[in-house]
Length: 212
Image (cartoon, rainbow, N blue to C red; front, side, top):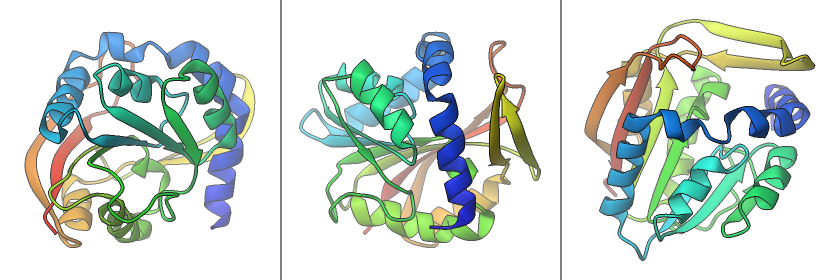
């Protein structure tokens, strides 16, 4: 694991409790996100195991579990995983890196990666695509969300806590290529502006399918 990932892990460990208190209910204010997640669950089917990759405090994992699927949250930060386990005992949570996911080949029938790829360097996106495809069954859907742009925003302070974390913004074609080049097929692609309570960025959503 790279030093950059170590910094991300420590940063999210530091803000885990604050993150949960501030953002645990954010889906209430995100109708488009809920609609896309519902579409993913419907495509996967109620018998599927759905992974929430970069699950944070587990609020999206809990939403998925509430729709009747078996939900598994995975996050780089053990602090976030501890918060998620306490907040959402009906789901399973694991600590792990997006480039080395703690999951068996083809374990998941669907997955979401909402704003988790943004902590990877652009050069790491292809390897992440390979790993995402490895843990998904053939034909399984994947929902990805990232911030659009070409900048890197660095935080050394977050909600009053010292951190060391970069947020990478990506061009849409960069993310599309990283996924399609390793065997995903794009089913839907859309952009939206930020909601009033969010950081002001333009966001990309990709619904892709493991074509293998």
